[in-house]
Length: 163
Ligand code: RP5
Image 1 (spheres, rainbow, N blue to C red):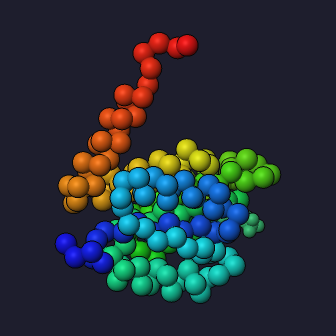
Image 2 (cartoon, protein in one colour):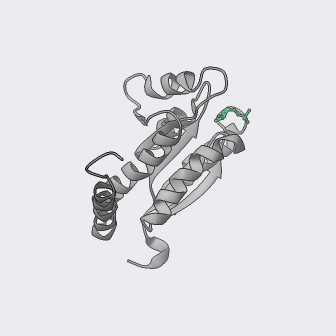
């Protein structure tokens, strides 16, 4: 497969303030040697940017979208409404309701337009990247191997007894 044609994950977030959580997605994808792009796209502050992004997404060889948002977190749902690519939602831990608002906004999508919802905050960001790797690994054996290797070393790092 030519280099610029390799499968890519798109990491988007509603605000700069989400990046301290969403940077963890980047770290995992780098570890697994999976290509990604990262953008700030706000469903309510930059609706035209969101629409343009969704319209062009498949031309860019994006296979999975990870969308982080907090509060009334409609970004993942709106992106899923605009593309049939898999969209993984990361509920950002908001200041006022500690992410419960974000979690419910992302998870409670009415039927017809799905968003795969992860846990609130850092765990969700890490797992979203691992899930994106699983999806890409369905058609990319080298990604699948690296993901399995990651999981194996994680298992090995768990001590048998507490100190
Ligand atoms: C959402 O509003 C963003 O995803 C962010 O989590 C939240 C707060 O944004 P800022 O006020 O920090 O820019 O759109």
